[in-house]
Length: 453
Image (cartoon, rainbow, N blue to C red):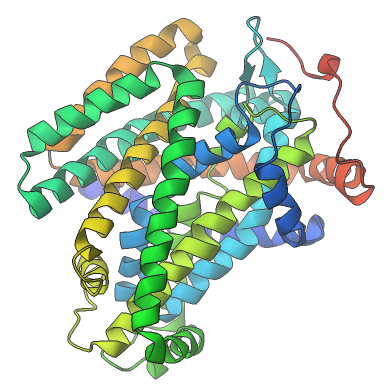
């Protein structure tokens, strides 16, 4: 436990944060701020690209990616950042999302550019294929796939299942074993159908639950109306002058506020981790840039919208109710949502359970694709069985060590992925220039341009 705790602290220290933020900023500038095409990207995400190659719709791929990213990090994670870094952490978290859109755009582009077609017509892609076919670094691609498989069993299966079973036990007294069995059964029913089944379920659950969660946040903001503007000012000012926080908030330094805000933002939206492009490669799309734009909206919804709303809710609630404890992230979130009469706590529980469950589904696909890259398609059935067993075990055991191992695996995933993004930035510029800057977004890549395995 001490070893992985130390390793996690090293991997997620300032060097990693600087590398990720540096990549976000570098790609934002080099690609001429692809964030400015946000509304076009949102329109594309809900417009089916019919008649094109791929396994799922662009919206299905986006929903699956969002399913894996929107989770406890958006709710409890933001509150923890505030508890440890003060209200200024919210601004740093938000900025990571704004600049992270460029990285998520780049990941989606490379996923389509270097995806390969299987004999049955299905598509495989992700950073491992960009590393192998774009940079000829097969060994680094293998390492990425190994880290992804390990991370899926940790942060995807056991950690999320444990969060659900613990929450159900604490809130309603449901035994963790029964909760775990229920989660495992529902997971098995969905993942047995592969990416199409996962995308269909995520496409139904994610928008529905996200809408309810956002409405709950807006309701609390309405209740705290007189404190919202002071909360926004406090968030902005304390990001650069933490001593101005006051009001019972922790008096962290600028470095601490930035560290926790950036780290939670990165952990929440996964921009740069290399997970989302694995499912983006399965999308039905005419060319790489169309899916790249759709992928970039994932970070917008995850961090720029949901994390920001959570931050405003919590900071305004603490200002409005000084008796709320600010030293515990989970307690902060529960206290804020308890202000919604009758349905506040059930809404929070339902949101956390749904988000955690869809994260289990999304990460199952990521891990499955990593296994297929390493060992071939026949091993994916074995992986699914192992994944379901891990979901059950994760529900009933202590996961302190698993959390630290999962953190380490996520960081180790990011390093090869960032290498591919930086070294292939010339390809990113070339593709973006042709399809986006020269207004050829409706042009279709010829089928012969997609290599076969």
